[in-house]
Image (cartoon, helix red, strand yellow):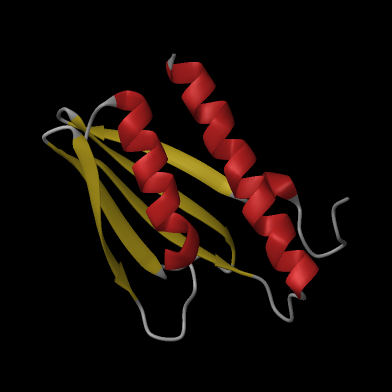
Length: 112
């Protein structure tokens, strides 16, 4: 169920190829840069490095998304994320995470 504050269409996933690599920008509400996570192949493993702006929490999901997309597409992926809605409850945060994950699933389905 979508709350009154969060419109799933407001949360956007924009993909931009950068040579062989991929940049995903995920934003919504008051758009900003809260975190950036880069996942890359290191032999058989995917590793990730993240930079987060203090007092932002986007890194808690940008890392997972970068890893999932890098594994699925077998390429280096940077996810830059910034989503802010005033006064979100825990349920609202879960809703935002679900919307973001659904958009990532849709994006990956289009790439396969």
